[in-house]
Amino acid sequence: MWNDVFERKWEKRPGVKQEEMDAFLQTWNVALSMQELQEIRARQKNPFPKLSPFYEQYTPMVEC
Image 1 (cartoon, rainbow, N blue to C red):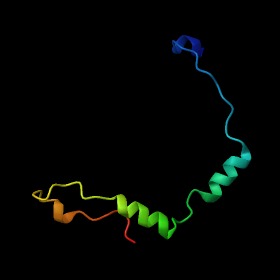
Image 2 (cartoon, rainbow, N blue to C red):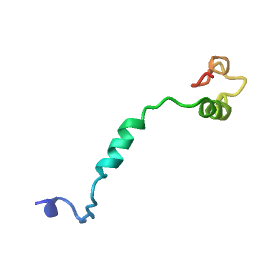
Image 3 (spheres, rainbow, N blue to C red):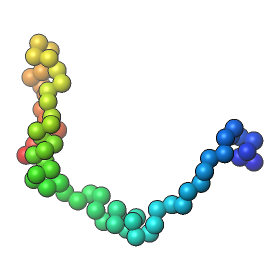
């Protein structure tokens, strides 16, 4: 059936291993360390030019 719908046959690959899924689910929402927060903050720059009315409204996404 799908050969009639798609012009190209795509390669099927095995899914994630259960151990990898368990590890991901236990760690995906762990709080960032202070070092990670500082690195993120250091990279954030005001994207608006100084003459823009939005320049003064900009605040970094991560406050440390």
